[in-house]
Image 1 (cartoon, rainbow, N blue to C red):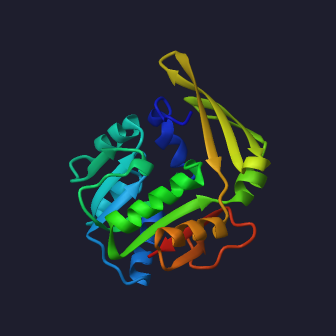
Image 2: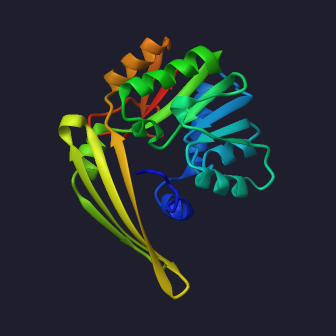
Length: 245
């Protein structure tokens, strides 16, 4: 399953080709301004190797990064290079913090990995009732059902460069709204290649489904935007951003 154990060590080299994390940090800061919040303490859920946690820490926010993978966190700690960031090895649904935060983030598909809606409700309720300041913001994004069903779908993708070759085989299980992803990697180490596999499951949540869960958890307002935009999502949006308070 998605343990990110071996994958952790090649994650950045792959993800930085597709995602501009500095642009995401800019966007998050613009949301803070737009919603008139200035959080000192910010918690980045499913922070991975710190690709959003670290840029925000450099901008002066007191960051806490939470991730289920100790391997990903070890890389994040190395990359932090002396920045005062608290990294916690926890599952999001078992979140346990030392106090409240001015903002919570969960970016680049973290919510899609929480498969049972009941577990997602548990997470939302914990954030709202225990760990977020009264006027704090909860910002997250999802890969949409359109993307998981029609773009990733049941397709196979192949990637090859100088040091990494991988195949990415997918199937979308309509009845369960699940994207089942199976990746096989060959990573060059010296003159040989090491082979390892990863399986990832993501659930396709609709805006209505997530809004109902958020409202049930106690959030009063839920706004949605297209990816890195302040426009409303479209039918073919591949990523949607939620801003909740």
